[in-house]
Length: 263
Image (cartoon, rainbow, N blue to C red; front, side):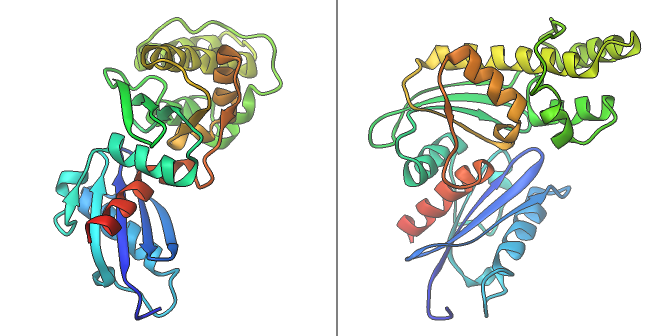
């Protein structure tokens, strides 16, 4: 292992940091960590955790070349290059799951829809970052309102047929609607389904803006929200494909692939 070269990609989002370490043979290690105050601290933390999984190699200095992406990418001084997450997502998806042509990326503070060509190039994209409603931060707040953890909330609506409509597009007002309904004694599962439907509609609108081409994939932390994905599938009448690696690691993987090429 010591004779191998290592190439790193880190994706510093609003909630978590992700790192992928590649060799010339493939993926050597990955890590997902909670954010520190500074983006660079998050990047060090993610790479440190990744390298801890590689025998005989423990230090970030082992990287021959690294690329940073995500909202904090320009704050990573040790990275050799920083590249947009749109580009890195397209590269990571083409490497891992090339059949996906339309992508919904639901992250910590924004939702993006991306249309990809046959070679993985970006044909079009649209971003909804004016309000965090429907993002990872929003779902974390909602889970706290429901007095549960994020995983339990995401599963709460799966077996429910009835729902209460959540009308607000604003995260603060949507949370207020949920609080009001809970205080009225309405069934939590039905409120949860209303929230999932509201976010799914927002994703559906963005996907339509770029033009929906099968096959469709979901990435980002909220791609793990089973209740949300179920509602997006219902609106699309298509099955959402899971990437062959963790949906949160796609951009970091793309960054690592770029690092290997640039090196």
